[in-house]
Each structure stands twice: as C-alpha cells, then as structure tokens.
Image 1 (cartoon, rainbow, N blue to C red):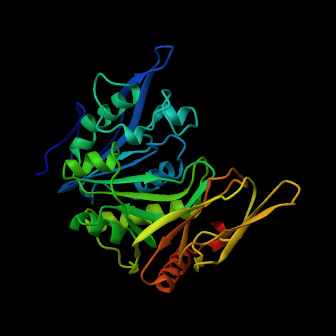
Image 2: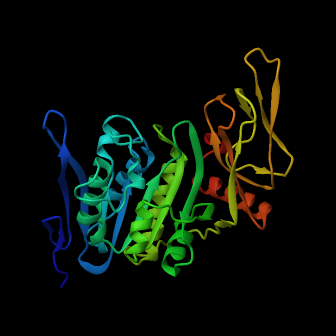
Length: 339
C-alpha cells in the first residue's frame, strides 16, 4: 500500500488529486497572497516529480504547459507523485513582471532565508514547503521580454539521471549549462535532486510550438521515470548537445532588421541582418562569429549598442543539428514560421 502524501501540512490520499493554496505572503491591503498548486498522488510507488513555471512572473508558456500536463495524468494509473506549481512568482505574475516587487530576480535568491529580503523569503518558502519533498524537477522558462528562444533544455549533464531526463524530453537542442548562483537548479543540485530547465518562446506571449513541445516533453520524462506507461506511438528523438553558445551584440544603435530565424543553420561570416539609422543613412551588418544554429533572437527592432540580438549555439555536427530542428518542427506539425 502507498502511504498518503504529505505536503506543507496537507495530506493527499493514494489515487487522488488535490488543489492546494499555500499562504505565501500578504499584499499592501493585508489581503492574503496564495501560491496555487496541484498534487496528484498515484496508487503505486514511484518518484516525486515537481513541474514548476513562472519563477519569472512574465513567463507564461510554462503555466499553460502545466495545465495541459495535469489534464493528461490519471491518478489511478500514476506511479509516484506529481506536484504542479504553475506560478511560483505570484507577485511578478500579478504585475506582468519578471521580478518581485523589490526588483529582485527570484531565480537568484535560492535557497533564501526566513528573515531576509522578500525574494529570499519567497525562495525559502518554496524550497522548504515544496522542493524538499521532491526527487526530480522540471523547471519551465521562456526567453526574457522581447526575446524568443528555440525550445531547448539546459542541464548539468554530468549527472546520469539528469542526462536521461534531458535526452528523453525530446527538445531539439540540449545545452550543457553551468549552474548559476542563487538559482533553483543550484539549490536542487546541492540536495542531489536532478533538475532540467526547459526554455522556449518569449515572455508575455503564448507560443504554440513551445507549449506543445513542453507538454510532450514532460510526459516523455514521466515515462522515462516509469511514472507513466510507455507510449505505443513514441517517436525516437535525437537531441543535439551544444558544446557552447554565445550572443551576438549590436555594434551600433538603430533599427534591427534580422533575417535569421530560430532554428536556422548559420556559417561563420554570414550576414544575419543589419542595423540601420532611422533615416537609413548608416547601416551595420550583424555577422555570425562562428558556425552554429540560431537558438535565440531579439524580437524588438529597436536596439542600443551592446544589446544582445542573436544567440548562436555551436555543435560538432552543425548540419545534423539543423536536421534535428527540422524533424522537431515536422513532428509538432507546426510551420517553422511560427518561430
């Protein structure tokens, strides 16, 4: 028999799902601010997987991904427990902002502290009430405002379990990314909890490619963790691991005319667009510094000198990486221009 699952003083029986509202803080009016989440506790033993979104409050794709995953999970057939937190940074979400009211980035505040800044307190609350109850984590993100990302996984691949989760997710690109201080990935790794970070789309926008790929990817990982039965129609994906990545920065101020799109293969020295003055008198080309695949783009045409405009990932086999991206788009049955 599987025991009831305990989370933040709440109990969920085997084979049940329960929506919880955890008291996070108060607004200026002393109105309680709640963190919503849902727990699905299976009838059979297995991992405890956390899927969470909107650590940055303006990153909306992950919220819809969480909702679509929840709609596809039957607690009577689930092995283990799924904890779904669609909005971690409730303050930022209410204000359509990446940050907390104290202008801190929540993903630089972990593990936090009970008596610290607002960011530290929210991080401490999330770690102690939710993260510490998990065995695996999938953290959902998008690009920042006015930047769009090709669906990609970022993870510390030296961990065998983390690598397996990253590979089975099925995104076309995996970045072997170092862990940043104060991030959820950092605090999870310090507790030996394998975690992968999914990046796709743009802040304050729904992207059908990002949402469909993210939903499918989480279900793929759950099958790999044996939380769900294998799919009879599972398609083998061969994601490419990037050996490095770098942003190309604007060489002058002006209007950006970017011709390169997400998923494009580019060659060293190739012109990816140009920056012009408002009257068109002065132009500056955007040149690829190396061979690679475009995995991130600025979507705002107004740029200042030094702004990041195009993110290029490098691979040992660039052509193979391009084919992986093309297969990925074909699998989702969405035209590449959606990017």
